[in-house]
Length: 235
Image (tube, rainbow, N blue to C red; front, side):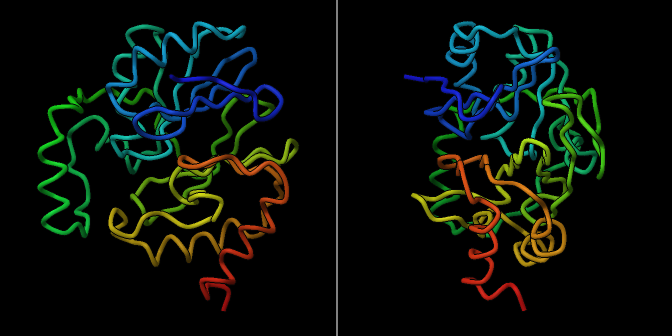
């Protein structure tokens, strides 16, 4: 059963989707970050409707992968929300450009092919095309930071005054261990680590809100530096 819980002031997480974590940001312009798979839409709507805040007016896709964008088509119809994504991934979400190829073995490719009917997906319009440095009007301002590699348009969202960093798949929390994006689904994994080092290690934040795994609510910035050190990425 999907449940929403507060993880920071005005920030709720909805876990137990079939895909990514979903975050709801309360305020004058309620915002939803990522949406899970298409099959998650109805349960997400019931969970959203149970919360005291208003319905989301803006959806943000941290990147174009189906487990993060799949439910947006149906949720747009339910709530009339607008969808925002980085301009480099927007055409993939809209269906005019194909995904970059993954390095997935044949057995796994066949497995995903068998599951495809469960994840029926309709492409959807991206009303707001984001670029590096854009400021999204939520929680006092979410800064868009482009971190390419997992996809061309993967982004993280930074709120320095509240010490928050939403990371999508750029940084995951796998059973309490921070890691970069999954290599088999990341055509540019080395580029991702280079971008983390160049753009993220100097950011100020204590709370990391990943697309997969539990939020890190304290000392997250130091943990990311340690993650990079352990992987030999600081040199």
